[in-house]
Amino acid sequence: MGNSLPSIPAKRYFTIGEVADLCGVKPHVLRYWEQEFTQLRPMKRRGNRRYYQHHEVLMIRRIRDLLYDQGFTISGARNKLQELVQGDKLRVEEMASPDMEAADTGDTSFERLEDVVTLDYDEVTTQHLLSVRQELFEIRDLLSEVL
Image 1 (cartoon, rainbow, N blue to C red):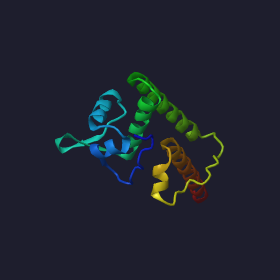
Image 2: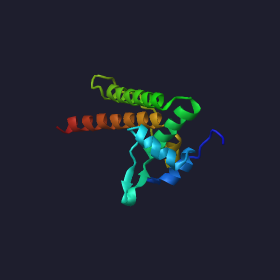
Image 3: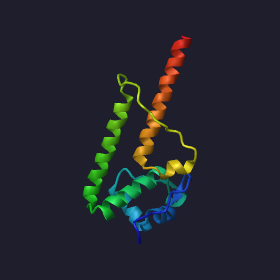
Image 4: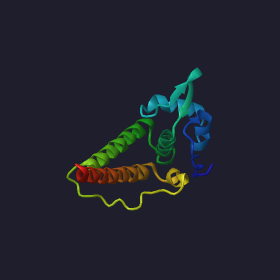
């Protein structure tokens, strides 16, 4: 099997079978990873059916990459994933800092949903947060003019 995985369709929820196909792993592996990685918590409905959201599919792909491509152990992948989550939190805190000068947001608009889906999760999150931050500054300026 090649290293390339299929693109993730623009849907809200995915069944365990769909996620298994999208991530190149078997359903029993996904159930096992849920026990090992606390960040992975799909929604469960009637009959304990699992429904995964887009961010969880991306996380599973990241876990798969750490384990299968980079050769991490389960414990090592768990630690690395925790480091990545901590890094994301620090970046969000830095962007939210009130004394930070206005950020250069660049073009954060997306014309097609596929453009967002194919980007790396970190890139989408950062671009989205910068876009939201810029909008909040604009709202603050508008409100200060009115009041």
